[in-house]
Image 1 (cartoon, one colour):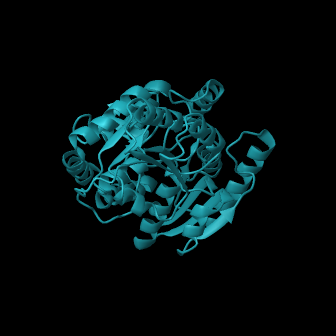
Image 2: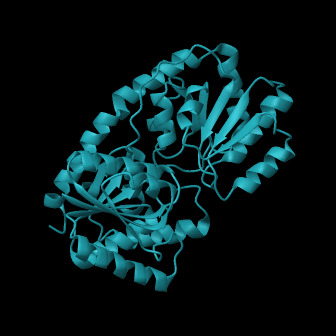
Length: 371
């Protein structure tokens, strides 16, 4: 099968990019021929260059909306379809999904829009919400199939814009295969957060929680490690200076050694404003780590409150601080870490997700509205 992927950015390794990289790895193993079209190249495209896959750069394929560029991007994706002649087109992220779906409509090609999270989720800025909602409502008539990464994502699309349930295909993000580890009984006194420094991810709540832990609860034996980078970096640094937390918070940046940070941490946290299905939390379960995360999007499909971690409300730094300290006071890491590993094995194993994804891809051409 010939598969064309379309994405705006390959210059980072956020959830959509990591999912795409793992998809392509699996496509190649299965004998498919792949091509990727992107508006930005970088970290993720460097990884893809190690595989037998063609990369194409389209500068007009951007996250921002500008009519002239968008029109050019549609025509360039149409040209890519004409030259590559794909059996299916898979798009990632809202903007790439719009451009690719219009191009596929013009060329009558089966397509799969991967919904990592809707552009009009609760927590998105008002203008983005209204624009995203309107565009997706208008797009549903020409959209072939939606690949939703969580049950929440599928249900949200159906309830908010009335997408036909038959178009919704549910399958978690594909994540990197890792050796499963039992919880280490040693306590490292490290709490880990893996998230790009973007407004979607709620680093301020994590920092305020650590201000309470260090300066109010006087627990100076617990450290926070932040993995990631991005446009909110300066704001995060200023918050750390404001609360005088430099000694207790490590900014590790983007790293290719993320495994060592998971292994040397006791607990993974993810305060956030909206999500589809966070790959960072799936990875945490692979490493048998308990999790504390905001109860938004598909997070509750990963974190079973009181079983393998805890769910908190949005912006609730007080509860986040209290729950972190409770883990250390009661040494809950081994029990809840084992439970995380069980949830992973039961619902999110790499092998089972690959099987499900390939079933969706193999069935798409015959079930497409464009067949």
